[in-house]
Length: 292
Image 1 (tube, rainbow, N blue to C red):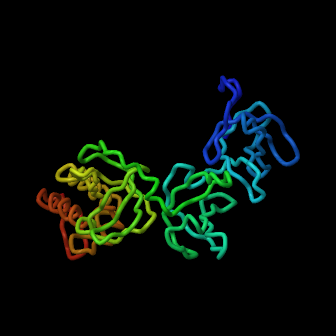
Image 2 (image 1 turned 30 degrees about the vertical axis):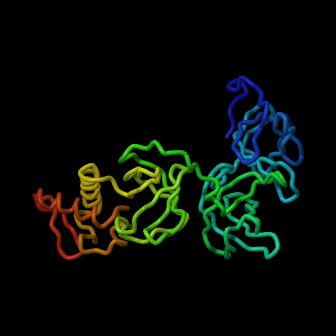
């Protein structure tokens, strides 16, 4: 994507490695376009990443990283995560002396050095990492020692507040989840109803902030605030499916979670609400819209 130069009032004084930047195209050359990186100098945007019609004088939204020859380059592709982010990334291959390589959505995989591995990872698994710039090499790398990067300030969330979650680790009590890309909270197994995947992103809610500052989480809204919108969602799904759905309060927690992304407890409460209003009928593991 590019925008006219007139809409950009100042030239960049600095571009940032591992981040998205809006940079001005300086010139066209056989390898691609050269962008004004400010103090970083001219930065190449290779030909296979150039938007159609881009030319000198335009401004481009690009991500900066280092290529296999350690050169600073730009791409218009968006990575899965950038410097300062926690993310769940898949291990594409492992080098016994260098480390693991992770798929972060770019042509060049992201290195997880051996020294930055909390445990040795395996090809094909999804590992939770924090992305940073290595002070030794000035390259973007990952670390699976992500706990060291968390914000340990006392949280200021309100009970019931919606938050973004990254499922980070399984514990005896449930799952640790990174809250809003900065703090750690706990989802209790007794309230989840199904298995979560390490590295997956979910929406959640603040259940409570404990006296010690730790965060308790839930995946569903509490009480009527949860039941009413879920009941409407079930009715909409029934109407879209022609009046019948192969899921009910007798279904497994996994089936319910796959269908509506809620716990079995929340689903049963919403079904009970609809049944009492005579809006649905329940037959085994199937629900139907009630006849008018």
